[in-house]
Image 1 (spheres, rainbow, N blue to C red):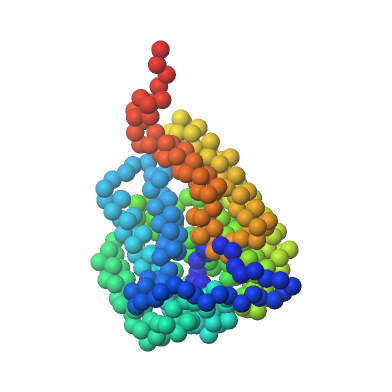
Image 2: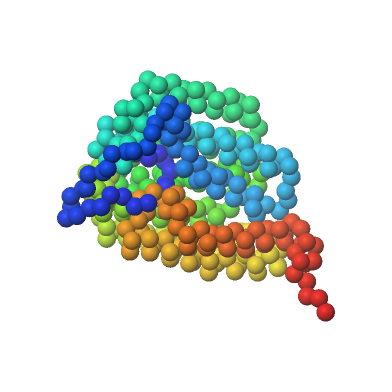
Length: 330
C-alpha cells in the first residue's frame, strides 16, 4: 500500500499471469529495515513541494528559510509515521504483491510490535515539534494525519477518491510552505500541483493495472487502462495550463525575470511529454519518484528547468547581479 502520497517498472506479465519475483538478495539488519519502512526515497516529495513558495517569495530572510526547513522536517516526519502505520495495516495484502511482499513488515523480518513502537517514537517527536513551533501554523500537518486516517480506514478503496486524496496531501505540503513564509497562497500554483500529482498517481494506477491487474488493490476495479489514459492526458493539459497562468499572474517576478521564467514553459511541456512516453509507451510509472529521478532525460530536463527558474529568482532578488553577468559589453 502507499499513503496519501503519490511515487520503475514492475515485474513482467504475460497473458495476464504475474511472473514470480526473484528472491530478495539484499542483506538485512535492524537499522536497514528501520530505514526501509521509513521510505527515504519518498522524502523527495516533501523536499520538492514544501519549499516551492520560497522560490517566488518577494523577500528572503534567514527566519523564513529556517521555518521552511522546519516545515520540511516535520512533514517528512509525519510521512514516516503514516508509512509505518500503513505498512502494518496492509501487511497481509502486501504479501500478495510481487514487490511490496519484500517490505520488512510484510516479509516478516520486522515484528509488528516493533513497528508500532517505532511509529510511537516518531509520533512523539512530531508532537514535540508541533508544540514547540505553534506560531507557524501546523494545521496542514494535522489535516494530513486525519486524511491519512480516513484514507487507510476505507477511502483508499474508492476509485478516483483514492488518487484525489493522494494529490490533496501534496496541496497540504504546499500550503504549509506558504504558511512558513507568511505569504498568501497562489490558487494557480495549487491547481498546478494538484493536477501534476493526479497525473503521477494515475500513472501508478495504470502501471498496476498493466502489470499485476486489479486484484491487488480493490480500487483498481473501478479503473480501466482506457479511462486512466484519458484522465492522465486531461491532468497533463491542466498542469501545463495552470503553470502558464501562474507565471503570468501569480509569480512575483520582475519584467526581465518573468521573461526568463517563460522559457521554462517549453521545458515543462517536454517533461510532461517524456513522462507520458514512459508511462504509456514503456509501461513505467509504477513508482513515480523513482521514475522522475532515474530517467536521465527527465533529470536533464529538470536541471534546465531549475536553471531557468533559479536565474529568474536570483534576478528578482538580486537584479544587479544578473545585470552584471549578462550585460552586453562594447
